[in-house]
Length: 136
Image 1 (cartoon, rainbow, N blue to C red):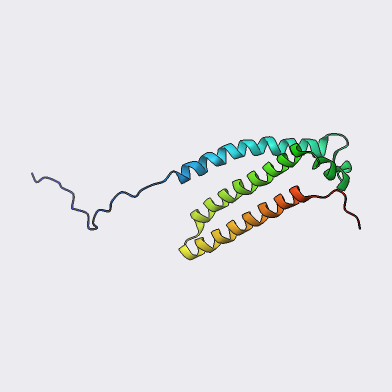
Image 2 (tube, one colour):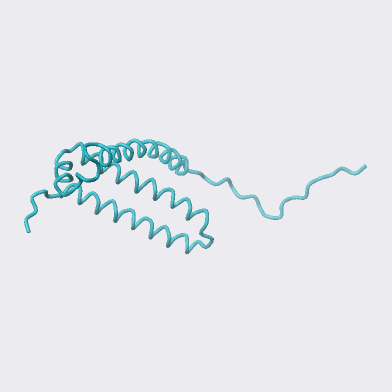
């Protein structure tokens, strides 16, 4: 009886790719930021929609009073940053999974990163420079 053997591979062996832990850190970030966002968003919804008369009391004066406190500035800033980075990381994963061409993947990621930076920058700017004493 002849012995069965496997043919040698036709392509030369490549050295093992060096891997970083970037995807692991992204995975961990998504879980931790998701839990933090649940607390931040549910707290935000409870305070803004259910407490003391609900949405009928929300106006310029309410926001001015709220953002006069560093606590609420930090709360809203954390919600903004975590939501943008969490959503951006999720969309980056979708782009990696579904964009077939490298050029398409590259330009979609450029648009994604630019939009994330723009929204975070403008949102942070508004939170920190909000002036409740605006005159017409």
